[in-house]
Length: 168
Image (cartoon, rainbow, N blue to C red; front, top):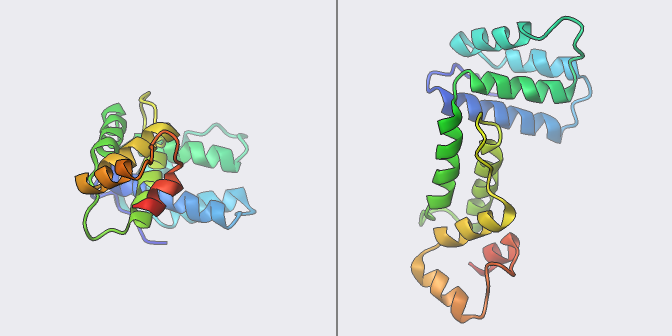
């Protein structure tokens, strides 16, 4: 895994932490304490120091479980992010437009990942529910594509996100 130094603040820390956790959960990491040490080895500079402060703030005797690791990652991210960052992430997702160079399947993955990452940021704004995520994905498409979708008798409320991606 790449080294994170947090020079770009919350964007570095959020992406690094979230990707690390996703990769480790995909491999069903068997030794929870190893997660903590492996993550620490991917940090340097301010990020390393901040992670150490999160880790050492955990009371002695607290089991270092995978769930506690996830919470520690969120605590780490919160050292760089505030509630406004969560609101901005959700607003960004609602207003994102499909770049011409990104295939629809990749855009769907981007939407799902950005929504999932928003849940790792501090704050109380709800991440997008499935119906809102579908609507945001639909709204990201070029206007002409949206018109063809409606003319084809399709409906965002009835279709699943995968059906939207397949159509577009």
